[in-house]
Image (cartoon, rainbow, N blue to C red):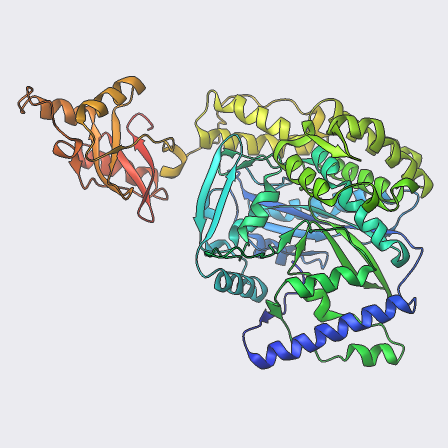
Length: 617
């Protein structure tokens, strides 16, 4: 999440000072590019591993701050929510056994974290979106207590001027409002970095954009959110919408989302990307900066471009340009942000090797990709593949081709050649790219997860299926086998699974009727659907009553059965007792028993969200 010692830009003098530093940083970058002061001809790789923390019941944890303190290693840092942490891996030259060394480094750090987490009765899981997460964990109590996150949430909320709207449609549909940026914390990534020479930066960046769709297609791992089956890589839509500060108006305005693929090919040099982002995106975060960038440069020093780096960190390009300083030398790199975490370290390293191989193996005929592909096609490919995964047909060099076919016939050979040209160890090339080949011929992580969830959902309640799936992901990760070798989980409720709250048992697939509908229609619906309870709403969608078959039978014995014109409001139980989804199950059961109820409507923030019945217990 970047520099933690920042604040929102809400005072005139702070904004002016930070803006001046930002413009000076850009001037310094332009000078360094023109004078050849940025490292050329060197390739390094680096990565950031985000991971989830769960309690022993595989539900999101609150213990990331305590676990981070106990880990006591500068390679680890916080993330937005208390159920996530991040590991920053050391950069390595792209040569020899670099991928094995990075893989070993990652295994060591994860094992250290697992040992500490176990002491706190926590588990570590690598996955794009944790299946067991619920809206209950997306409240402010779960936000990491850090000034950067609070400032980010405040400025995003203020700019939005109201609730954030989340609407994602896949096989299922998710439509929900939220009052903070915490939905962003559902996203967990494996962010990959590749150092690029300034002289080749524009060509490399445009090529990185062109290959995004097929690369993501083979790496998808996030098909589920809040129990809904959405996109193959739901993170793409979720991240964009969860921090989207754009507002609606009667006028048609061209507003830029801060999570972006971009709108055109890059032209000019690396500074052009930063110029575009300063032009299109208002400054939202800042910090006090004492150093004079241009003065440092004039004296032969190495400027860190703190203002430019901070502003760049608030613009979430899926392929992000980055400036950095390593051992006193400045460099440029591309950060790949669209690849999800997991499902195993081996899968992640295979993704990394595939991407790097494609980047460094770029054939000469693709040096100027802007002449061979329309950017709008590339952008459309990205969205389509995020939705539909590896089996998507995309436009590649103006021809329609299936992602699997493109990877097998063209991209894998490029990756093999690219890694070989950099002197990467042959055994690593074979070992890692064969994992990609296995996924191409069998299944991706998102396909495994969807098939597993449907399989479990045939016999288990939704919450139990999600918990069982999460446990299966965790257990399979311990084997080290890549995702294409994972078996489907058994559709049996875990012995340790214990539903605790109403939300874990309630039904959310609700049928409702209007208070002025005919009673006859309600009775027929109950007969057709074989249900015993129907919530009743008014024209505003507010819960105003409840129909139960038991109550209907009781009333019908006392009323004139010849009167066929009854409306539901004439017979319904008005102003029914309701319960919250966060209510503990023993308390809910007690309410039902004390009042002789066979069901309770479940209400959250004034909205009907479910119903729980005696049969559920």
